[in-house]
Length: 514
Ligand code: HXC
Image (cartoon, rainbow, N blue to C red; front, side, top):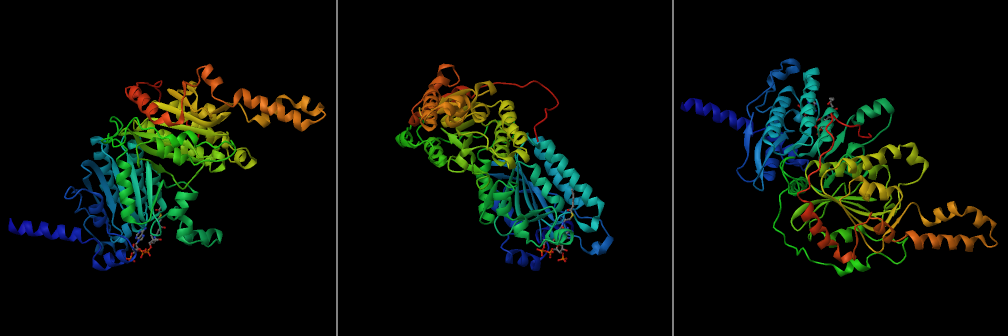
């Protein structure tokens, strides 16, 4: 027995050693932690239960018989984060560049299956050179195992991907199928085809950072939702994000002990909308004043800034926020913000998080580029997502709800449960100038002083429609409220709606307008 125990201990030690001290030093020299260091930073102390630590590949091609490491470049298992159970995998770049093998697929799939069956979140720490070249088609096929399970788990358990090094080739698609991707500035990259291949095919020279670094995917492509200055910060973001999410789609998100009075009214809100209705104000100030102090966590903060998507809390309960941002493109909806908003609506809906929408939107962005790139198709995603969402949906029209933005973001007909408007709301089919020109074209043209006549029609239209009272009169707005009352009003409305039950017509699936 002693000998057998010695053998086991030796094998375990080998597994703990990863690719050996030299490669670990190289990993540290790049400013990266090892897979095990990352796991101990992520998980509660002594909570990690490893599975598959001794699995190795059996490939003998390309001298691989001499390159067998227990664990085969990925560490998989279970642990706890702030006392809540999670499943994790962490690729170990020190072992064969973390390259993705058949054994890696078996280990990760096993964890995916157990996470799904147990109804607990899955967190992937990615750091890999992609498909293990020496395994040929077997490593390609292996990706299919993981993708298949990513899709099966989508909408059932939260799936979060941290990109902590290279994530190349097929490796990018597992994160792309998960709910959230967190990247680290300077040390993480995601790309389908690397700089060498791009140079060979197109002649274009580009660095890995410029091709698929954290800035690119957070600010340009929208592939990643979160950016962090270093690995520790990325892991902290992942933990914070989990605090807004339930363990699975049958549960509600955890409630935290409220630390902010539900009756708090911020008087500053009553003067936040500028007198000049073409002037911007920062919607983030509105959100900070309404939600529990310090609870607003933006998603996709650096991408499509004309819309704000966030998680926050109201009296300790998680809420999802969709808001227009008047400081960027006047808060209008375009292709990227439509994608951003619809993704967030779907995330909130699948995890039982009520949605609060703040509307100040002059409409969809007009323009040839937008039309050519399919703003109709992308804009339809917002409508589809709101219509399909069965969680409580509240809206607050702070200022403009013009044309498509009124219908898409706040209309009762699309299932909005409670609609509030501030006295500054403007709910109309189109802007006053456009409306006056369209309706009164002939009178303006025939007038002696067309400018003055046009202004008269503009003023008339504004007087009639640029307020919330017409909409309140026909029941489209439930209540016109003082801005400072918004927090207690939302809290009370959500209290009532917490037990809302709504089901859609059963079907295989609809056609989301992709
Ligand atoms: C096998 C790999 C590997 C891989 C890296 N290594 N990637 N081994 N298969 N895919 C090995 C290296 O040979 C090296 O071993 C060790 O890992 C560390 O790699 P380095 O290159 O020394 O590290 P670094 O300089 O940091 O560069 C990291 C890297 C680079 C940028 C990721 O290794 C790289 O470009 N790798 C290939 C990336 C790629 O094109 N993958 C796509 C595969 S195709 P030694 O022993 O020499 O130190 C794919 C398609 C799947 O994934 C499609 C499915 C849908």
